[in-house]
Length: 293
Image (cartoon, rainbow, N blue to C red):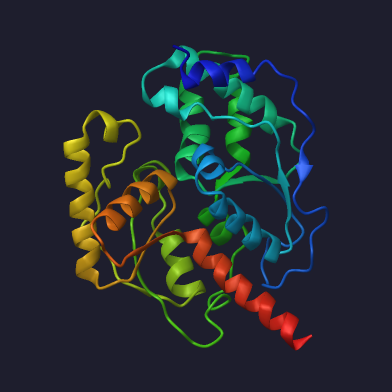
C-alpha cells in the first residue's frame, strides 16, 4: 500500500509553476502598522489547505488590511512534519528539501504561517535534520530567518497598536486561550496572542487554570486514544470553568481535536483560530467604511 508520505514524495519531482500573488498590489492599510508595504508569502500548512481554508483566508484578510502584498506559493506540500514526528526521516528529508527550494524562490520580505506546528518544524527541526549537511544547512538557516508565525509577525513586525481592532460597538467577547505545545514550548509564544486578544481587540481573556497538551499530538491521538481523550476532556472542563464562550488557539491540530470534543459533548463552546477573530474585526471596519463611502 502506498503511504501518504510516498505520494507526497513523488510530487516533489514535478516542475513547480510560478508563484501567484493573492493581492497583485497592496491596498492602503486600514489599520496603522509598521508592516505597511511589505511583501509576505503565506505558508498555509496541510490542515489549513485540506480542512480549514477559512483560517488561511482569515490570515490573508488581516495581512491585506495592513497594506501588505500577500503571495500564495503554488504546488506546496507537507513541510515534512508528519513523517518527521513519526521518526520516518527518509521520507521527511525530501519534503524538507522540496519546501526549502520552493520558499527560496519567493520574492518576499517574510514567510508567514498560521500554523505554529509548521513554523516550529521549519525554523527548528529543519536545522536539526540538516545539521550534518553542509550544503543544505545554510539554506535551512536562511529560510528560518525569514519565517514568522502569524501572531509574532503582527506583534513584533507590524506592531499593531493597542485598541486598533476593538469592536466598533464596544462589545467584548469572553474567551479563553489554549497554548499549543509547538506555540508555547517550541516558539515561546505566550505574550503575543494575549496582546492581540486583550490589548489589540479589547476582549475579555479568562486564563485556563492549567497549561498542558490538549491530547492531539498528531499521530499520538490515534496511537493512544484513551490518553488523548482524557487530556482533551480535562482541557474542556478547564475551559468550562472560565465561563468563556470562545476557546482560541493558533494550531489547527489542537483546534480540530478540541472542536470535535466540544461538539461531541454538546458544549456551547466556539473553538476558533485567532486569525478568524482578527479577521472579523477587520470585516467590521471594511463594512463600516463601505457604508460611510
